[in-house]
Length: 264
Image 1 (tube, rainbow, N blue to C red):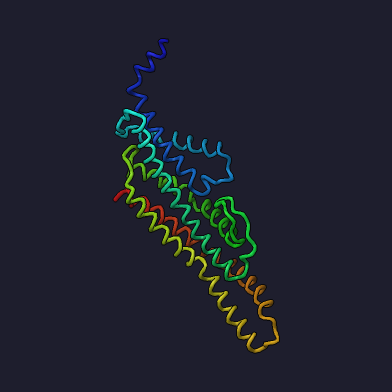
Image 2 (tube, one colour):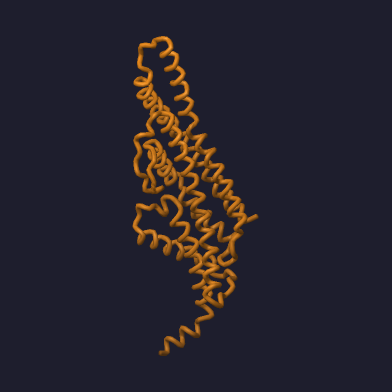
């Protein structure tokens, strides 16, 4: 039983670090479960859990010296963990909101082009979406990885550890304000991303209307649906680069907004 006495003797050394690790694991776990790519629902739960533990083990030594108030009872520890969960979930949901803005662009294009009837299941969002929305979702997810979005999210996580050290609590008002701002920005992102293709569809509709007035014997409905589909796909092919650029800029703005709300 000598080893038990040794563990008890070292308790002042390992107990604070264990508390810090558990708090960081709570923050990282909430981020992994809510952020796209990192916490993709297609990935098995064991893989996501291992990723959370591994990332926490890498990050924890950076903040070993954080002055965390020692919890004297379970309720106090649960309150500290809840604060860390809010921080991690806010960061992950903020990134997911950007992807939702791209989904809005796809929904708009699907409705206007007449492709809204073809819906597919998106496992990333756990819902039925239009085929154009699915295409844009995977395009932006690929862009997210290519531009190093996952590294930006981890860097933002490290920034939160500086602005909000483990166990320091969380400003609920700041988190709610930042999420409200991000929701409005996501709708603007969807409109900006869909604007080129929507403009092309508007022009094709005007041209089709003029043709229908000139040649009334033509079936405008039968001609309009395939025409709008072709125009939408062509415009999307030419503007997908712009969509990715808009997404990249918005991702930077989102991460900066979240971290600034906690610094302030």
